Structure formats: C-alpha cells, structure tokens
Length: 292
Image (cartoon, rainbow, N blue to C red):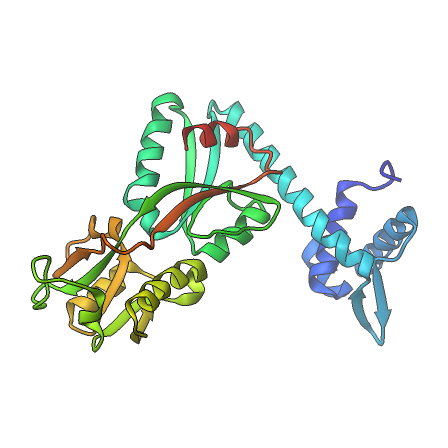
C-alpha cells in the first residue's frame, strides 16, 4: 500500500482537506479539477477506505480522513524540518532551535542560556518567539517550536516539563505610593486598592497562584485592568491606575516610575519550567536540553 502512495498524493489530500472544495483545492495546486479528483480517488482505492464524503455538492472528511489529516500534517511538518536541517548542515550551520517563551523568561533565563550555548556552538541559529503558555503548548505539539519556557504545572502527555527557576512575587506600586519597604506589613494594607493583573487566560496556573496569595491574606482583590504585557502593567501602575503583583525578576529591565516590594513572607512562588516534545526529531534538541 505505502509503495502506491506518493508525496504528491499527501499534498493533494491535505489541500482538499483544508479547502473541503475540489475546485478551490485544484486552483491552489494549479491542476485541473478532474485530475485532482482522479488522484484522490486513486489514493482512496490504494488505501482501501474513503477519505471524503460528497453530499449535496459539499465535501466532508470521513472520520478516517480527519484522523489522517491530523497525522499527515505532523508528518509533512517533520519532513520540512528534516529538509531544513539538512540544508543548514550543508551551509555549515550546526543546527537551528525554535524557542518560545513567556516574557519574564527573557529577563535572565533565556539570555544566559543563549550565551552559554554560543560558547560551544558558534554556528547555531535561534528563532525566538514570545508566546503565552497555551500557544507554546500548541506549538510544541505541532513542533512549530522545539522548546518552550512556560509557567504551567501540567502539560499533555506528549510533552515533558522540568522546573528550572523559582521566583518570589513582588508588589508593583507607583513611585510616590506612601507604602514602601520600611512601612510595609502585609498585603491587607492594600485591601481598598485596585489591582492590575496578567490576563487569566494567558497563564491560568500563574493567575491561580496569585489568587491564592489573596485568599491567604483574607480578601478578594478589586481587579480594574488585565494585560498580557509587563510593560503595559507597569505603565498603568505608573499612571496611578492601580497596583500589581508580578514575579520579582520583572523588576529588572524596565525603566519606569514604579517601585517593587518583594513579598518575602508569602509562601507562594512562581515557577518557570522548560517544556519539549518527546517526539521532536530536531538533532540539536538534546544538546540544548543539556544546557538547560
């Protein structure tokens, strides 16, 4: 069976599966519609089962076709990566790593990692993308990225996760706020303040950890704004639109009129972890994980 199926058949199948319309798929492939229909029919005959149902001039994937689409997408993605790595090797490049990260990881972990890797691998390429946790998980599963730096405790079974950096939380206040390190006693001093937090969907585990801090302190915060960027949160705090709580590492790298009070006596911590796909075939991945 596999000897009958060629790469072109897979590309034809994926295009029809994406469009669910033979004419539009044929136009994308620059072939005739009858020719495309014959190729798909030949593929179905070789496989011994239907990939598409054609009802009332509409095209639907069969259950088997939907499964095949998902698996073929991964296979074609792997094949593209293999060709890309081979080309890099031919050009004298030692490899390429696609890396995702939450913003706070760029404050210390990611830059240090890149510097250490460069000392051993002079000719390695990096593609860096700031992404929220959920987008990194999807990108790891589809192998769009090779490693991710996330703030999550649980990931799908296809992925592995390893904690690498634990941090305290810090209050973020306007520079002229009357509370400072000297007169700070507890979070309950801010019971009547408005708070600005990371968007809950950006990192549910992280958001829950912050909410636990307030439960321990005995009150529910008044949340006035949400954002996914630390710089936006700091700018809002700077303009007296609220105060915030962030990982302590974020006090570095920003030049704004805000101040930080580290919550040293709070038991909650935020953990940065590295995640990767156990089925990723990138030859550089194992070396990178050794550095991590």
